[in-house]
Image: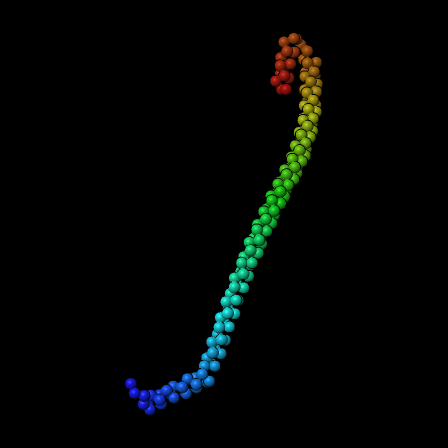
Length: 156
């Protein structure tokens, strides 16, 4: 293999090209690659931080859900107790009203019964007086007296 001038020219051109690339092309490429590497590292670090924060947020959310369930259970128990209390108060008020109404009805019935007894007594006295007048005016014999007494009993 002969080394000729073309090969030497190509070597010199290659060395100039490598030198030019090393001086002008390589530094901006290296800088862009370093910036990209830094951005990727920052992104990975941010992803790790976000993942840790997500786990913390999930734990806090679970704690809040647990607390909310406990509070909801407590509120429901209090509402049930209050409902039972209101129910008992309503039952007691109904009992009191029923007793009052029953007493008023009994009093009214008793007053009505007393009035009816007095009315009946007046009617019996009136019938007795009428019967006595008839007996006195027609005091003829015993059979007539019995007959008048049976008529008065039928009227009662």
